[in-house]
Image 1 (cartoon, chains in turn blue, red):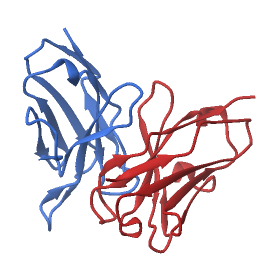
Image 2: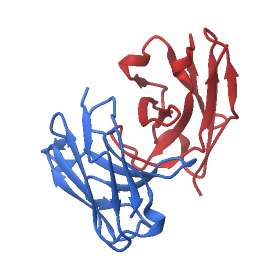
Image 3: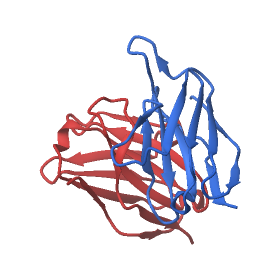
Image 4: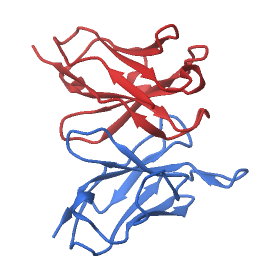
Length: 113
Length: 121
């Protein structure tokens, strides 16, 4: 199975500041023939199901604010919140869908300073 | 619009079975796989497996092999996830989720509301 790790476990950021979350996979999730990274980012708020933010590592889901961006390739990925808003307080998960089981990272909790 | 409506909360005793349903609407049911993910209280997300509603083929996480069965009823656009030999560690919210692409390998853009399964003696 592909093991996903995230860092940091949690972070506290001031409103309007940048938040950066890292995700690493134990093996590459880049499908070279299509040049696509099978990596997604989710946001989860208490009592709610996860919400898809980013897929193919950097494609923003429809309706997701452009302050959310994804980058990276191969085994190393980053989710950036360019200007933290109060409504962004949540836990963020990365997930690989390159190979079943489609494993998730352990999550990063983002809070307001 | 796409909707995934799951069955209600369940309380089960250790050793029992639970069957959670997920009724889909607003899209072509047989075109998209359905994935199942669970989340224990205060914990992260755990991918359980998926079913192809077109034909019924399944893929399960090794951890659940032999204990989980995913089925579907195309006449009602409903998928089911049955988990047997329940233990306290199976206490979790169980989600069904629809991938955003008909491809087998896809992330999920629509999720059910979740079904809390509590295993307690």
